[in-house]
Length: 350
Image 1 (tube, rainbow, N blue to C red):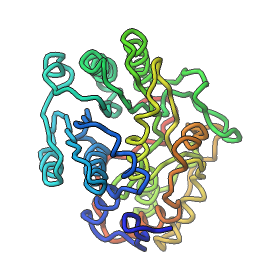
Image 2: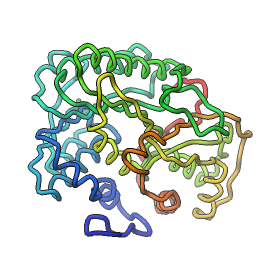
Image 3: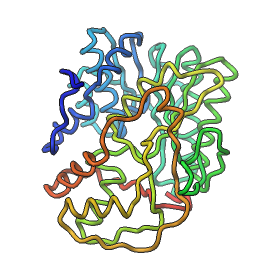
């Protein structure tokens, strides 16, 4: 049943302001949960693609709950607009380079921490930096917040490709991926595990498969190719993705799942999407012909979300709503972050 907090979804999204409002709109389950979170809530790496709307979502949930929760966003904030956007929404910001242990030590105390720091693209050109950010920064965070409860963002890239006929990788599968980036993310998880075991720090690792909104994501990538009359490559013919607003909410609500040693959960859609089917649907919505290249492989990067959905429920955003919004956004010239997901990369080279 819809409530004042969860009005019906619009047919289309007409502006970035409307999109940001949707991405940071709390559902009742989050409002109820946020009352249990002590102040402050610190978000490390809050200046990236997901961090700003996650921080704003936490603030809006706390306001709806009447809960005095200070939300502190920590980042290098190379994008000054992201910092200003956060402060306009009541989120406190702190500039810090978390590669420096002294700057991590100066951060304020907190019982609850969301860790979102990571580097993926550019790995092929600078693998050393990728390893540093994905392993040294977690070590600095775990040393500083040894007594905190931590939700740490990981990635589905810790897994190898799995058969499409399966339900996708589950959390018990071996972490044997290809490529520098993917192996660096396994290293990140091992750092969290080491300090969690050593210090008893409760940690939950969320292996995210492709958050998407209208300015970036797999759906936007496919829609852009159709709109510009480029062929849609079918080689990596299947994928998972999750609406970024749903992902942000589940990240926040995952804090009680933290344990020592860490627990891991796949975070994405229960549905496995077919690139061909998605492209055909987007082609109709865009009123553009679709050209395909290649043939579907029998394996892909896929995740089984049964474990997390059994605890937090399935992400509620309907897939066709995401497709309809994406097509309208592209047709009307909606802004793109210009950051393709490279979901079709199969050799781990990003």
